[in-house]
Image 1 (cartoon, rainbow over the protein chains, first blue to last red):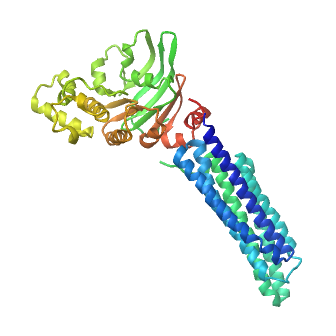
Image 2 (cartoon, rainbow over the protein chains, first blue to last red):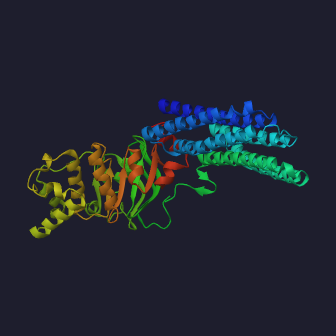
Image 3 (cartoon, rainbow over the protein chains, first blue to last red):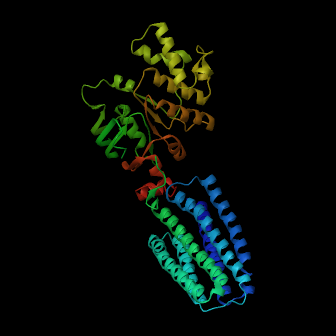
Length: 219
Length: 256
């Protein structure tokens, strides 16, 4: 009965999945560039960030057309409005992966064992991003809650990163500049975790109508 | 349900209605707040228009109809023996899907009800006609042709004449049965504006097939299906987070 509308919603889901995959690629590449200290890999991140910008426009276009032409209500309205909010966080994830890659480019020759901690942190945030987008497509409340819960793990990693960098500064004062760059990278990963959490919160809204304990449509 | 702080003007309790063997309304218990717009939605044949008509006893005229349960209006059962149905229909007026002005002048259309209720004084009638036409947002369009036939007006104007006619007898409640479904968007918008303006003084209960209309103007929405009242609540909540799966399926166009 509403097959055209359902096709459009499926298209929206597939675009969201593609956008999620681009986020994962951007973070994975930035992380690999860091651990392999590779400028060549780092330079591959900005084009992905640009592709994310374009995807954001595409998804906005689909959502606005659906709002205009279908005047969605109930679950449809929540799904479409959640997508519109989520893509802002996804686009920011691309920017932050790009910021990490940019630092890697000028940190040439500073490869160290600390990067292992960053690899674990990156794997954690990639999982969060994958799960949050998956939760959206499958409208899976439990998976969304898992993402939010997992943000604490990423925050713990960031605490460990800070401690290890303090050690470096104390023991090797001439590595202060390197430590600050690494601190920035740690912070970017931690922010990516926050964006994945935001995405998961919109998934919960999409499923339940409640966003961070608040009813969004009030009288 | 409607907000607990609302003043209730009409309340049905376990209302059942049968057209012969057809059980058209099933145990409808429904509290309608005063000075609000309440929209009744649902697929064709769900009982929403039947329910609307029970509120001013229009179903009494249908052969073979049987009604049990209560409809309380300001605390009095409108199906009680002592009820004066003519008086009830003055208090609870109705506007239909198709504009049905009487084949007489615009003035006489509006003055018809007050005259029936014994008002003969010309100055008093003039005053009622002007007030009613102003309330129905059509005074400016017809003030210079009050003695012309109402049948010469456009569909949208005729419908507003019918609203003015209903308002002329100073009802408490206005029942609107798909009153804009035959109108163009501009006439529809005028009547929607009118309904919103009127609710400070009247209670409006409207049946509509137009979900966007229910969303635009109603405070509360009730969803009927197969003679049952499935869900009833504040309109914004109903259209953003309906509780019942059947409501969600209907308003998102999955059936109906």
